[in-house]
Amino acid sequence: MNRYGQTVVRLAFSYVKNKQLAEDISQEVFISCYKNLTFFRKESTYKTWIYKITINKCRDVMKSWSYKNLIFIEMITSMRKTKDSSIEESIIKQEENYMISQSILHLPAKLREVMILYYYEELKIEEISKLLELKTNTIKTRLH
Image (cartoon, rainbow, N blue to C red; front, side, top):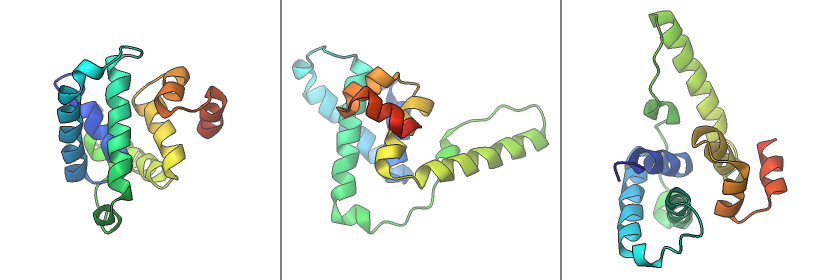
C-alpha cells in the first residue's frame, strides 16, 4: 500500500472522477490483492496486476446505478503537486494542469484510460496492451 497506494487512487480517480470513491476503490483493490495474493501467477509485474484489479473495480463501479447518479466536482490536478519558483509560474502551471486534466477527463473512457496509463503512470505500450488485453496497435491508435 505504501508503494502503490497513491498511484492506485490516482488511477481510480481518472475513471470515477471522485476522490472519496477513488479512495474506497483503492481500499477494495488492496483487500482483493491481499485475499488473492496466492493466485498471483507472476506472469506480469505486481504493479501491472494491481493496475488490472484497479481498472476492473473501476469498471464495476462505473456500471453501478449509484455511480451513474453522482455529481463530479474534483479534478485530477488536485492530486498532483507543482514546484515552481514564483507565484505567477505556479498559477500558470496550475491553470495549464487544470485545462489538460479537464480535457483528459472529458475523453471517452477507452481513450482516457490509455492516456492516464501512458502519460501519468508512465507504463510502456506493451504493458498497457497486456493490462487492457488489447493489441499494441490499438493502444498506439488511441494515444494518437
